[in-house]
Image 1 (cartoon, rainbow, N blue to C red):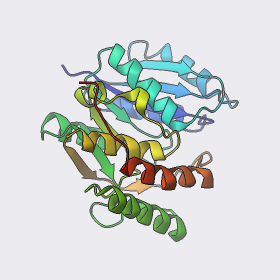
Image 2: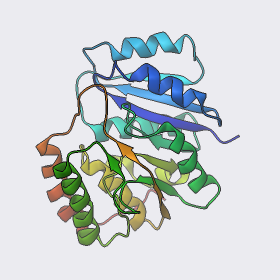
Image 3: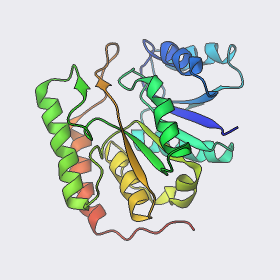
Length: 241
């Protein structure tokens, strides 16, 4: 059986982490979870440790000291997942903005439909976002359009954080060469896979704004992505193989 793991970075997600964990484990397909917690002062890691007693083989936890950035969390998780023999590696938020049921559709796009990387897309069929203010929808939509234009990459939701990678993609990408640490990381990973010739498939999802906890978005995140995309356009990208 293919081994599947969902990486969930956390910072102050005590309101969501138990519910999202139980929901993922209720799905068919034997998904595992790796929580990467950046020193949450609200006790998120402690809740995960309590759940590990109930799910000792399926729930894993890496604790880091302080907020080190979304990109570094995922890169740490990718390397851990490869070392532990997983075939499909997922990115997903803890706050239910991504519907865990869609993990099955992302997996099917790779395992059954031939994609190397499947993206849970808010924008491939119009705009599928619930409970975001219009200003944020417009900013996010046009940010993806900007990236698509600059990089000439036919992916509608370039900043999406709901993704399934096959093992082959993560083994081929030089993870140590990935430079962006915030949400620009999502763009850089997709573009790198695209430039290396991997097949990217967008799977339409409905994105729902978090109901509990606090958003981690900031203006600095968008600044890094804006300038990082221009630099990406002129960077030479080589795989490990």
